[in-house]
Image 1: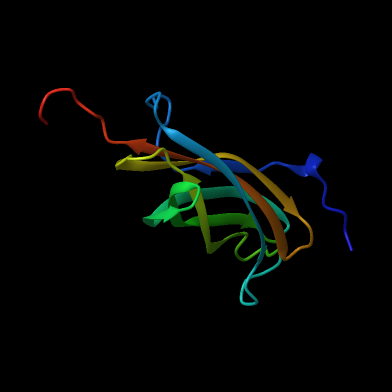
Image 2: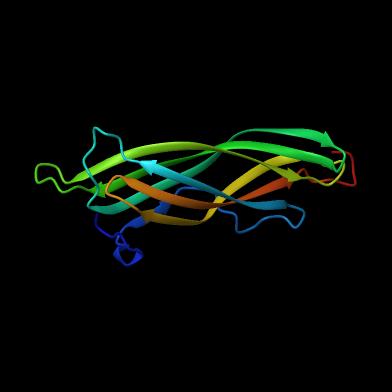
Length: 155
């Protein structure tokens, strides 16, 4: 079996996500890691070289629960990615495979907070091609709960 090394990293990683440069100071944040092994479907040819990876995180639902330690928000979402790769086939060299996998986490909230929005961003992705059909991925996600603004006058 061939040895696939990080030095062969000739692919482009494109993340499609929200811009989180200006978070309010009262945002409640958390980072999580999601690890996944992806296997190219049998109908597709073997990978010779990764070309491009498109990755998009999304939040599908959230729910606030009361616990003895205070309120928490449970966040469910998914990571969708499309992997473009070069196959060792002269008739069609570029192929793509799409993968979606879920995540679930929680964030502790301050007392008496109402959620305005929840933002998500991919901070980093580590991709390791372990065989001609298997890719190991480690995705570092950043989640931010944006509380509703309190105003001194009637809102």
